[in-house]
Length: 162
Image (cartoon, rainbow, N blue to C red; front, top):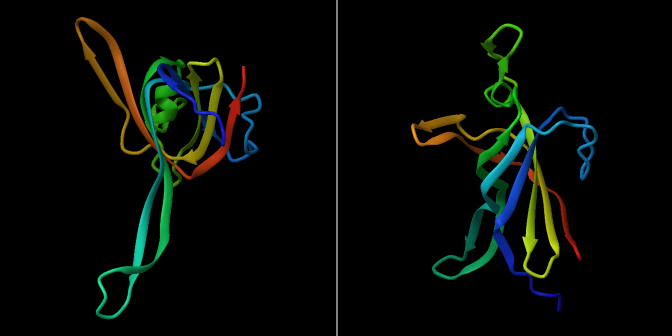
């Protein structure tokens, strides 16, 4: 049996990268991160299930997955100077939104700290922004940027012992 990890929510963060289709699985290369998410939620897997049932019987006989994806949501704690343009798919040179059918894709490196000092790392992607970039503000606080992504798969799953 593997060791049980108690993960600390206060130390959890996700680093977001733009994916250009060339980064190999498990490595971000020299990519510059768009920013770091705080208050991170990762849902894995989000899946669609189909149940096979027999004639006249209410119990299912078999289960099949028909869709899987990984959900990542959070709020940027730190964000790069052109990250909002990249997230919103705005061409900085023309100051216009990209009207092509191609969706911008992103990767996320999520890092959890355990109470015993171990680190749990999860790399997911590629995937598009789910919905829009929300910039919320108030007089008493910094501008918050909440985002949500639908990622294709888990690329790396690793526990690093301290």
